[in-house]
Every structure is written in structure tokens, then in C-alpha cells.
Length: 531
Image 1: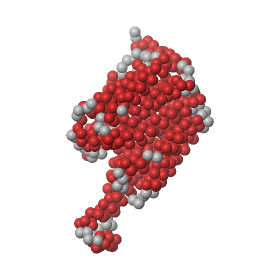
Image 2 (image 1 turned 90 degrees about the vertical axis):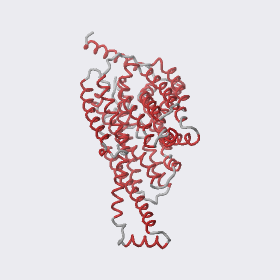
Image 3 (image 1 turned 135 degrees about the vertical axis):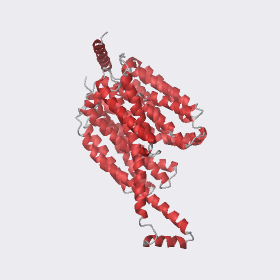
Image 4 (image 1 turned 90 degrees about the horizontal axis):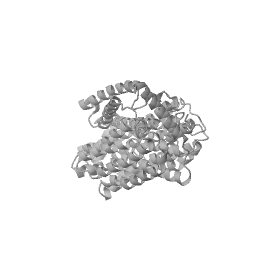
């Protein structure tokens, strides 16, 4: 068979599969309820596992006899493998079918979780985490596609709301649950808890959705595209995860990774845009709604995730909070998010999603400004209040922007679009983490040097304070050390407020991106997907 005829047949089969998928009626009653629970449980397990290990790293590292810095490879290995396979979701769906691929990914996730718990060394744990990250890639975008197909068009906004709730709760529950398990049981149980949840979710998903699978299309494997994807994403993710520890471009290792990532990325773009059967469908970015929604969602997620990382670091390292109290201070974010998500889901059928997303960015800007007013005397209530209000932004953030990015797409392109959106979001989250922690340290160093310019002998304020400390019985060296600690606390707090000011401005600027989209209103975004 010629390449042209093979291509034509593949295209015909793809559209036939799409038509078959579209012909399926939404689920009803208990079946839809159980389907929603099964999909949500699988997603929750996945999202939980991406954050549950973070607080357990010191325990894992100590048990395996390695340093805490080496132990962070447990997080990096999962993130790299996950980031590589998420954008492959569209291609893998065509090869194996939505339902088969989702259930297979869930069951393999269970198996790799069991292997992670059995790990006997850091090397074995990192290897099994790579496998776990790789098989988990398609789970989130496919759960999103299956959830949308389970609901009627008029309730697509509600489907997105229910799906986003699991995405929101997972990162909040992960560190709390991980810390509790590590303190009271063996660290291996942070992986073993996935086994019963995953088995039930996989079995229930197969029983409910097995007759609703998409048609499989045997497309050629884009080996070069896959190779380039692995190289540039792997290099970029390791560079972002390890850059701060290795002094960024002062390290030859980081410099080489950066060069490899840039070159492989450029070749990847060129190859995928010209390949007959690309492994990642970059032509989705030609869709105005997809581009505007994905870029706005991903950049905002990067800034948001930077805050998620910075706040507990600042509270624990600078303000003297314990891990437990830092968790309590940040826990209220889930309250309004969970309460309002179903409400936002209903509003999606009545309001322009751009209006709802604009509200989210305005609230993000407001709470960033509130945090920019922090000083070293801030109390627990002042920390918790903007965190509580942030729940409004969380509920109005994911749902409309996801709907905008999927608006106007054919049903057969939804898995690829969901995979690509989640991939860009994950990459921006990695950028947000690295940039935030690096800027926080650099700005703190700058503020420290500026503050010490007036904290030196001969300055009236300095001499007065040192005299008072000497009067209390401290030696000059002890007094200078105490004063340096106060200056450090001020410097890191000022650096954090700099980041919050910048975040407030960035969220306001991002509103303009939302209004570049032209979604079809009144149908919940996805409900307006074209045939």
C-alpha cells in the first residue's frame, strides 16, 4: 500500500472513530455517578502521588542511606518521565483507544507503585519512579476526555468542575498525608496506598466504559519525533529541577543540558510540523481558542505554583513555622474551591467563560497584593485570609480556561488537546518553581547587602542596638550574629513581597490573553466542540 493511500485510510479511520465516539450518548443516573467516582479516584491518586513524596524525602533519604539532595531525584525522575508521556496522549489514544489506554495506565500505575514501595536502594526507587511517571502521563488528559463524554453538552461545565476538584484537592492533601504516613508508618506506604484505590478505579472504569472505546488506528511510529521529545523535555526538566542546587549556568552540566534542550526543541518543532504522522499534534496551536486558553492557563499556573512553593518555604525557613503549622496556614485554599466548583460548573452554561476566568485573575492579583503587604510581624490570620480567598480564584481558574482551550475542537482531537494543554501546564509549573526559588534567593541577597550598608559600626542606629545588646550581657560577636539573623529575616521577607508584587502585575496583564479567545458561549466550552 502506498504512503498516500495509507495516510488516507488512517485519516478515514480516525474520522470514523471520531464519529463513533460522538454517536455515543451521555451516561445517565447511577452509571454516570459511578463513572465520575472511578475517574476522579484515578486522577486523585495520580495527582496525590506527584506531591505526596515531597515531604517524605528526608525520611526516604535517611532510610536509604543517601543525602537529602540525592533524595530529590525521587521527585525529579517522576516529573521528567511524566512530562514526556503527557503530550503523547493523543498519539497513544489513536493506537490503543481511549478506554483501553486509560485502564492500562491505571493498572500499570498500581504495579509501579507496588515496585516503588519495595525499593531497596535509591537507584531502584528512582528507576521505578521513572516507570511510574511514564505510565501516569495519559491518565489525567484521558480522564478529562472520558468525563466530558459522560455528560450531556449542557452539563459539560459541571463535568469540568468535578474533574478540576480532584486536581485541586490532590496537591493540598499530598504533603499532609505524606507527612502523616512518614511520621507514623514506613515511607513505603505512601506508594502502597495507591494499590487498592487503583485496582478499584481501573476495574470500575473498564466495566462502565469498555463499550465506549474509540476506534484504534494503526499509525506509523514517529521515532525521530519521539526521540527529540525525550531529549529536550528530559534535558529541560532535569535542568529546571537541579539548576538552583548546581548554581545554574555556573555548572557545565546545567549549561550542556540547556544547549541540548534548545537544539532538540528547535528540531522537534520543525520535525513535528512537517511529519506525516507526528507524535504530538502541534497544529492545535493554530486554533485561536486553544492557543489563548492554553497559554493563559499555563503561565498563570506557573505563577500560582511558584507561590505554592514559596509560601511554605518562607513560613518555615524565615518565619519559624513548623511543617504542621505551615500546612495549617495554607490548608484553607481548598475550602471555597471545593464549594464553588459545582457552582462555576453551572454558571458555565450561562456566562461567557472569559468573564469567569477574568474574575479568577482579578482575585489572584488581589491576594498577591495582600501578600505583598506582609512583614516579619505578620500573624497566622493574615497568612490564612488570602489563602482562603484564593479558593475563589481556584474554582474560577481551571474550569473556564480548560473549556476555552477545548472550544471548537472535534471530539477526536480532545485527547490530544487535553494532553498538550496539561503538558504545557506542567512545563510552566516547573519553570515557575525554579524561577521563584532562584529569584527569592537572589533578591534576598540584594536586600541583605542593602540593609547591611546601614548596619555597621558608626551608624547611630547600629551603635544604639549593639549597645543595648551588650547591656543585656551579650558579647559583641553574639550581638552581631543576632542582628545578622534579624537582617536575614527582613531580607527574605522583602524578597518574598517583591515576588508577590510582580505576581499581582502579571495576573492583571494575563487578563488580556483570555480575551484573545473567541469561545462559543452558552455551551460550556467543550459542549461547543465542532463536528
